[in-house]
Image (cartoon, rainbow, N blue to C red; front, top):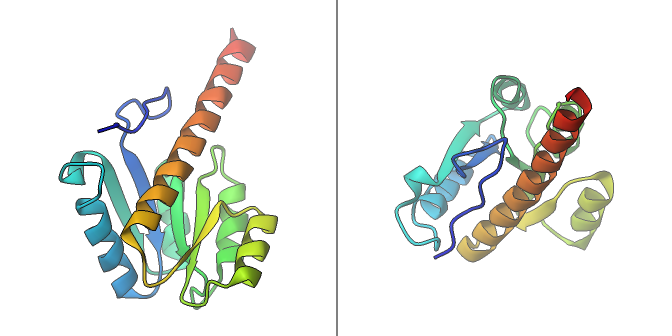
Length: 157
């Protein structure tokens, strides 16, 4: 089984995810998928899931911790995934945003990608699709973050 890559900004290789949704079942579903992922073993040592019910609480978490991947419900009430995208874009090392919706149609997918989201996941969640999408987002973030860290190190040397 492949392990997630390690990098300078996340030496443990753990995949840290923030789930943002006012719907408790979204968090429950993601926990079930993460804890019994197809990466092989009980995933507590590989995945770390944080949960926020609101945009405001999610922004607080993002200010306190470096989170590579944010999975965000389309409608946060109050707020939307677009507002979350604005908030993450202002962070020093912005996480990648994955938008979720029961109505994940081509229009939402095109809008989300055009505005800068990483991907869109339909609900109810498909285990394989969630694992594939989150792993891909995390690898992309880790690669980008490592490049930024090298660039900063060269600039300060």
